[in-house]
Image (cartoon, rainbow, N blue to C red; front, side, top):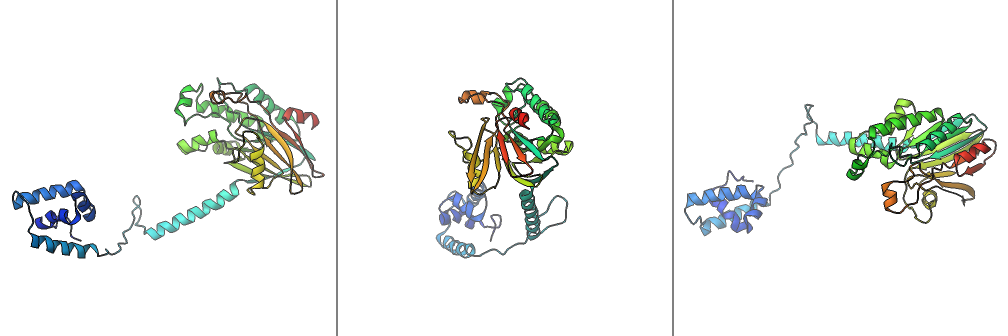
Length: 355
């Protein structure tokens, strides 16, 4: 196709009559409207004041343009150049992307599944969520430390963390301005807390506050703490196979899930089972800061649904929307290794007396 620079003055001036406007003409030949008007202005000056195109020339150019516009340009296999490397054809680039995505799919399918084996004949697992560590806020750090120390020194007692270990306000401007401590300080204290639990920590799940560092900076702080301190962490949820003696128990713990109900806190946990996404004996969801526990039957077996409380007693957000103060409750389950038996307790301190 003839370019704007190659067109004669007659051809340029005839474009407006053919396409109806300079803008449409510019779109048709692939140039900016300003460039076309400037070229037409120069053509008019060379042709005289009127700049009119004779009808015979205009008709000849119209016929020529119609022929050209129906031509399909040949495919050009232009290489894609990537920062100093050899030229790579688009087909090669696609294959590389396809392989990397396939690998990522396999990793995601495996990353939530964990197996734990316990030597004790009876163990207890406490589910703890929403610590929201942040100095200068209504966060019950004293109770948090005492619970962690209790778990650490009690034989057969272990913990699973359900997310939001820190406030980590790096996303919302109003929360950043109102923060009484920095995310760095909060993560340092959370690392100290993780080490209080030490070998009693089965797994720690990422919460939405934890994920803000991934979203804003591309850094998985919880994953980094896990690798540094040799702890098991999971991104959004953990499917746990807990082997106690001859018995096997399935647990699924997430920070968030859909199907929430303001009238029934365990509804989302039960829906997580009913929808077929996960099969479990004990289902746990954090995030709402409101403790709840329920035993129910599903397909002939007893199951448990629970939601831990929170150590963040209240916040500007919860006060603004009328939420009741949170109770730092850690639902705990005794698991028998001799026969299939699960006994649930609303809080870890009660469970310890029976364990």
